[in-house]
Amino acid sequence: LSQDELKKIAGFKAVEFVESGMVVGLGTGSTAKHAVDRIGELLRQGILTGIVGIPTSKKTHEQALSLNIPLSDLETHPVIDLAIDGADEVDPDMNLVKGRGGSLLREKMIECVSKKFVVIVDESKLVDYIGGSGLAMPVEIVPFCWKFTAQMLQSLFKDADCVAKLRTLPESKDPYVTDNNNYIIDLYFKKSIGDLKAAGDAILRIPGVVEHGMFLDMATTLIVAGEHGVTVKKN
Ligand code: DER
Image 1 (cartoon, rainbow, N blue to C red):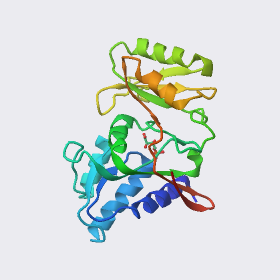
Image 2: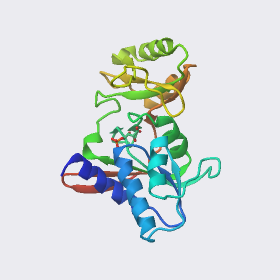
Image 3: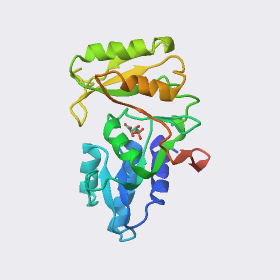
Image 4: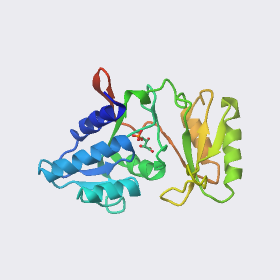
């Protein structure tokens, strides 16, 4: 099975948790895309009714519109029944890294107020510890004096041999700009950053930081699709 086929299996499995009448947080990324497609299809078939979607990015908003999924926002629905979203890393305690798709702020705002947060991944996302993939742990920051903020972040994690890089667009090398008109600093760790909660709180105390991509103690259900089938784990 290809990675995208595994993502589709995980995405479709998560939609089994969606009941008619629910307010559903719609995630962002290539795995969540399958879940949103599935919700649209079940609404079209009349199997699901009365769903209100809360999109976690402009990209998901566009996808949901194209599927005629009724949409609303956090101000109208400050409590969400169920959110479905992907992740970049999942550790054994269901702590997540998210944001490599650039949507971490809106995702965290929505997934924080969701009664259930179903995370959907293919098995390649499983890590022994956060940062263990050697890939980015994103931090959304304000553009003002971004180099200063990047330097503050890098020195915060010097013991983990951290490197902080501004996320840029592939062609132009201009800074990547989020849906919220902010920048993203990608943090790369060579070692574990230890106490994740303390690390997350320290990141948030840096004034130029808006939010970080560690989603700690938030996931209620983890769906993993792998070569040997799909597993569902409750937190
Ligand atoms: O940017 C994000 O937070 C996405 O949800 C990301 O974490 C997962 O994206 P993928 O499903 O395309 O791997």
